[in-house]
Length: 512
Ligand code: AHR
Image (cartoon, rainbow, N blue to C red; front, side, top):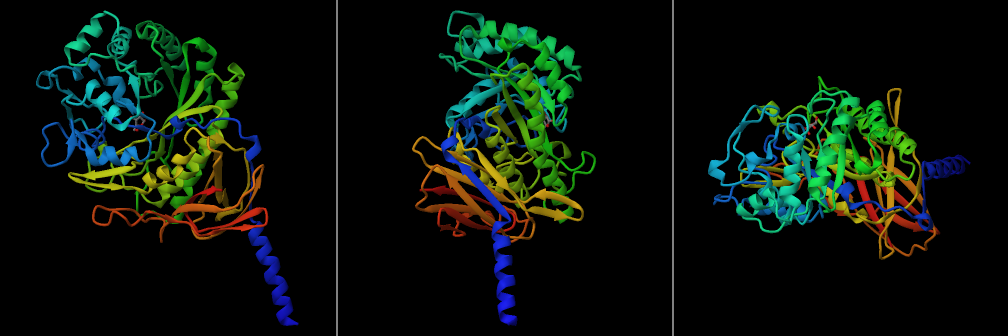
């Protein structure tokens, strides 16, 4: 009798456990494309992102390079299919005068990088070098123009320099500097964080300034295909978005940006690796807030642009912690753990699911700064957990988003709750379906039941990123501590899929 009771209790319990997370995929309703540009990157003249990260100089004999660009870094990034690269900032962009960075290197003026560490910038990496890097990476350049301390003419000249093929002063200068054909740069940001480091402007003032800059930038582009991005808001500041959407004619703008960092407290950001669960929980609360922010800004954009012509461009996102001990506080160099993998996986799911409005996003930043995908130390290089998430998720690039319904168990800490499971799915041109799932729970495996409507599933294959502790990370001495492996926690159960996803892991699987 006791055995029977135990059996009944156990079987009820296991049914409840299996039902704790339920996902429904509507493959037949896939309609909107997940722009590959959601998987974009960001490289600022900040710390060791450009110098020592991407670029080591043409005459460097110690670190293998092609025209100064690190070969190891370029090869690793190409494996991510990185679709675009934003440059030169960030806050640096509104202090950058592009003509300082062209022509004979020895003659280029030096400046002081006033935002980041007060170090001397020798301008050896400028427009030609950036566009050479983009060509090596086979990625689209995204240039952030100087509105805060530049002039309208200066930005118009820059566009003419990169895009004009007719006879013009800037074409002549470009050819003199060794580049005959224009590069045809499509993506242009007009200022950065205009409400803060980009000039501490009021939204109304910036909207007027934007109209002026966009007018002359467009004229200078003379028929080349350009995509103009207004410097948008931070996190939940919807008023900024409202003023811009109201005051900038839609014909002058293709995108409006949004920045949101997963930072627990700007005055006490906490360490990158030695955090406890309460800090982890706070970080994830901030990271998951991305969904609310996108929804709030989208609601406003829908009011002024119901046809969704203007893209929401999340051109800075990621985790932000205290710098590593004994490193320059102005260099924003931080390690990257499974916590960062959780931020990346959940945020990319959010972008995928909002792909009707979110047309581009840029992780901050690619190398050695904030939530980097690559860290370097002289000739050494390592791939972070965040790199592995982007590598797993690249299957979603340009695929159609599958509407998904997720019923998730709670991840509870004290009296606070978050959803344990985040997910998104897509179907590519060949009809292959991919699902990405994140279990953010710090200690409990999640059983997930997935119902797939609109397709017959014959087999499942997948990969997982997981580790033995949340704080796990890769170091130069142990660069493969965190890496992906085959996922064997999925099985078919009639018409459904049963998954068992370990605590703090990211899984991407394909249905065949
Ligand atoms: O990514 C670091 C900085 O964060 C950027 O320069 C700025 O735009 C933001 O505040």
